[in-house]
Every structure is written in structure tokens, then in C-alpha cells.
Length: 156
Picture 1 (cartoon, helix red, strand yellow):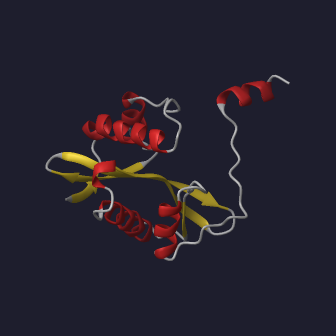
Picture 2 (tube, helix red, strand yellow):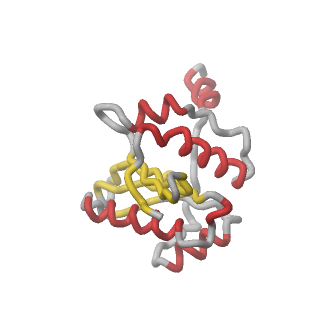
Picture 3 (tube, rainbow, N blue to C red):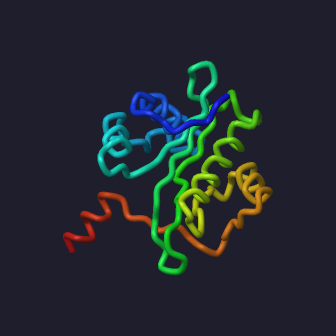
């Protein structure tokens, strides 16, 4: 297995992993992004994300997608949007290899913090993250406004 930066031609397999994650998170119909959107967002003159893939025998078996944020408290941070490992490859070190690469990238970029979210019921992931020294901040709540809510709000 190797972990490497993704290439534009990897995006169809990356999208399949994103869809697999949506099923795992009990949101099988939630994925709206397309291969074309991933390609445009990740491989333009001003890429919106960096993606690392784990590859074995020319098959992408995992991915981690990150992007920069700015914290008013600490400055430049990396946000880990998703870390996904194919179900058949879980428990074989793929997730740790991707996670370590993200943390190395954060160090290379001299960020002061890496942020991500984890579902409260995903005990395996929580245990994994806490085992690496990460802090799961139970007192913070995710807030979001989807496209319909945004439109409704602005039409008030």
C-alpha cells in the first residue's frame, strides 16, 4: 500500500468512497457532488482541497480530504473533511496511514491546529482519535444551513 496525493483521474474512485461513507453514516442519498465538481475544485489554478489516497494494486482503498481554514484564535488550520477506508480494508492500517499523512501535511504547512468532526455514535472512530491524543470536544455543536434553508432565510 502507498499513500500519495490524489490525481484528477482518481476522482471517480474518490467519489465512490464518499458514497460508501454516506451509506455508513446512514445518509445514502445525501451525496450531491459529482466527479466533475471534485475535479474542478481540487485541480484548478486555485484548488479548494488537497486529497490523499491509499492505493493497493492500483485500487484506491482509502482517502483523506483536507482544506485550510482560518481560526480567529490560532490562525491557519487544516480541516479534515473526510477520512474514508473501504469496508473490506478496515482494520488493516489504512486509516492510520492516511491519518498520519494528514498530520504530516499539517506540520509541513505549519498549521496550529487540525479540526474534524466525528459522529457521536461512531465509537470506533472516537476511540481511534482519542488514542492518538486528539480531543473530542463534546460541548461544541455543529451548526449548518443547507441550500434550501439559506434560500428561505434570505427570502425573509
